[in-house]
Image (cartoon, rainbow, N blue to C red; front, side, top):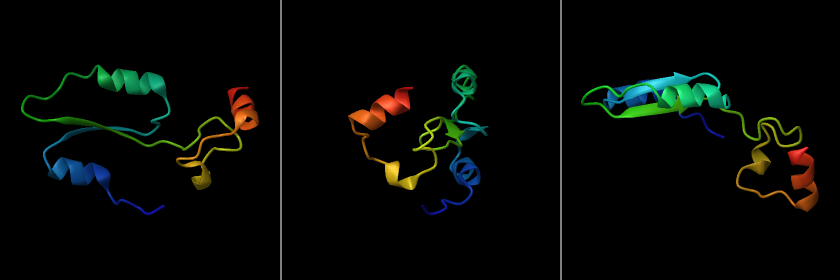
Amino acid sequence: VMSLGDLHAKFTSFGYNVIELADGNDIEAVLAALKIPPMKGKPTLILCHTHKGKGVSFMEDQVGWHGKAPNEQQRAEALK
């Protein structure tokens, strides 16, 4: 709900090798990032920009679904 600021800059300042993904919902991009060899002497962080509930029309980008489980009817609809 609140901006966390420039996370890339924050983690870089702590010495992380930051791999930033514009679409963190793209599983192929995440898998590719996981295959990038680590930098010697630096921890690596994969920073993903995602959308809550991606692909489920009534959940996508709806803050109210954060941490809330769907009921049986909603689950069935989401899986369609």
